[in-house]
Length: 445
Image (tube, rainbow, N blue to C red; front, side, top):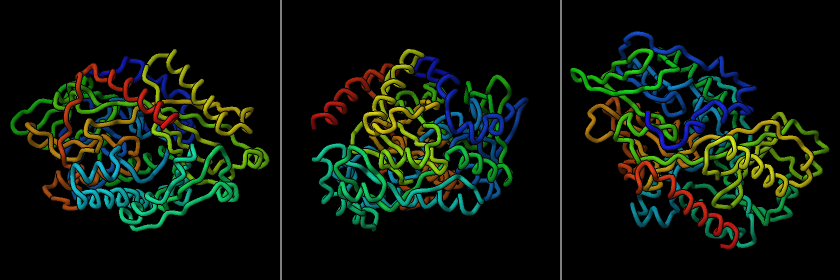
């Protein structure tokens, strides 16, 4: 496998301090490799939200499925994210989408965002998955006075999603238990927080109970076409199938298949979690709400108080991948945490981890066929919002595999084949310039 980050980025070191593994141990997610040769109707590479959602939908339709993961289900972004099931999936604003695709396509895309959140809620309900859900939608918090001008956001939210968001003044934030250095807020009543590993474990249990076979510790080293079928080879064994779904997102390889090369950009995100806090400690800071929230920066912070009264705090950024760079980003995220919530400067954050979100060059997700490879489909690039959009894309891929056109459920925005990033395997260099621009915009814009 050819990947664009150093080996440290794909090591266990980056999840050694992941809080979610305390709630769903790695051992319960691990699966054996595919020793020998196996056959299925559909083979799926990647056992995260996308792959398992696709697997569940396919086996429910009576199709045999084998899911293959390089490590174990949830080892990648699906098992180490911040647990925000919310709107999102693209980095384009309404104006950019209208310019590229048109207004109707934009509204179609926004409906898909909302449907993605609804799909996760339905899966949790239908399969009795207890994932510690909480929060009434999601709140954006203005990090500077100019970011608290919400008039346009209200109108676009009503047009895009058919709901009216709630504007919160500084006093409102204090009354609702969201105290901090904020200049106002906007709550959109769509979305919720959850424990992503519990959701993933429940999704996998549902898929396996319905007949899916899940393999682990089997990085696919080669895809070959033999007699009209695809053979996925790993050191442990192989899986042969009529159809293949690529669901590897930010942990993709440049050569499995080569079509993926330079069509995705891994970007780092990091998280800390506190010890459980007392009510007195929460009240001292003025944050007692269980609302999922994020600030208005481009390189945003995202945070929420969880049911066990631990506080999760995450941030975008971080460009290197080494023990030294991990230590540096840990210091930075702790510094930002204390600056935003000074009353908690003495509260320990024993959990820290990091991982990859995934971007595309056209800044929208992709869901569709892989050109030049008959019977191969791909779904990826959720731009940091993979809980909902990854699950939704997996369900759409299952429909495509069966020859069904999902119609408007698969918006035009997601059908455009991603372009390749400039600089190819050296494309990480583009992120340095982009992050510098984002930092300047957040600070001075």
